[in-house]
Length: 194
Image (tube, rainbow, N blue to C red):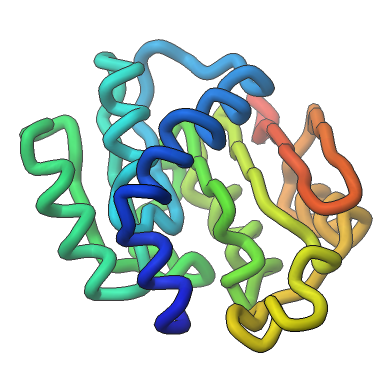
């Protein structure tokens, strides 16, 4: 992650934006279970995980990030949740969890940072139980053109058709999506009979 991105993701302004705009917008799209074993991929400083744990008291959540500094920030932020929250360093494309470990995998504004996003998509399917769901929210290429691309270069660029193909190839079914020119929200389910 680049220095500018780290600075933004650590900031109280990002925390407020995440809690007041990104998360409510995400949750309006996805009907999520009240009780679940949840994996958050790319938790950053833990602002989103904190808000999710407050909103869903029946969740046990594992918050992960690839960046050790972000892991430590999230660990400190989520400490008050005790056994309901664990924070671990993990690579989205090689998750260190057994098959069928989670009911829900969430990743918000992260997939464009994951170079091997297709492998990360397959890993999400692998760690989900039958009937488990993947909630992805991310941006696509156009906002990262020009000067912004020099400050925050993308690690991965893909299109929504690419993502749909990767989700289907990983075994997801019953996909629901909403999107625009610059962003998308996708909720995909692993079939019960897998």
